[in-house]
Length: 398
Image (cartoon, rainbow, N blue to C red; front, side, top):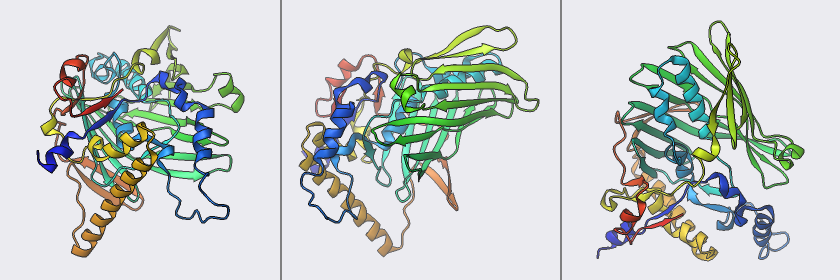
């Protein structure tokens, strides 16, 4: 067995965050505080913390790339992305796009995902949906995503990067970058915004908050959503995560639907002409019982795949072997620094493999190099048992 073969088989895949994961004992406030306090046992009073690195104890066992991509490929039942094009009327299609956007809101658990290394990728398929994401910049961190729906001819592109600001009692993280969905069969384009993320102190606590818009120029229809993370009392009573919004005609401003509910429970839409109310989203039907991707074709897994890149770190964290996880993380970071030194010495710039990148000041734009995303070697499937048994060297952790 060659060394390369050994490396390719060391693949660790983690399941997406489901709605029920918040109740796990690993993510309770008392558990988190114990992990935070344990960090200071070996730190002497007056020690210089200038170069203090976030240790494995405070990390989620997955890359940030997977956190982004699983918003699209992980769902438990209904294919909400495909529904966006299957609807007959423009207003029903916009409602479906709104529903799909709400489904991308997931609980934010304690811990920081790994900061992806330059060139890292994550490539997964679920049914007709194929998703490919690549880290196109490391400083600052910028991710580019391309997803296509083979049956309904849907194309989704994202560019994602952050602008964090300290606000005293909390940190406000503005999620920047373009988000575009194209319904090619309908010749419609939807421009989408992302709400901000709020990290509150004392914590732990992370919540989606703020306003986001969805606009389709071809149909003159627009939606506006307001997410409310709530006050401390509201969060204590379970009344946070509320969502309110409206659907209206862009030019006239004429309101068509009122939207209300909670994104982790149910969201309703009220037809303002007929007063009819319908449930457009049920979180329990979409983001519970989510499964990890499994390996369908090991030989096609890219060397840059997140599950390969971070395998040693992830295994160390899952086994609470913090020394092993820390050593593996430092080795990976040093290899990345060495690659940067070599590129500077040779004068050769790094070029993404799957996207073209344009930087304009502080803004980034990325376009996929191929018109569609190919079928991935990592898949979400109901018949996981049969496939997993054929690839005992890879590890799927649910």
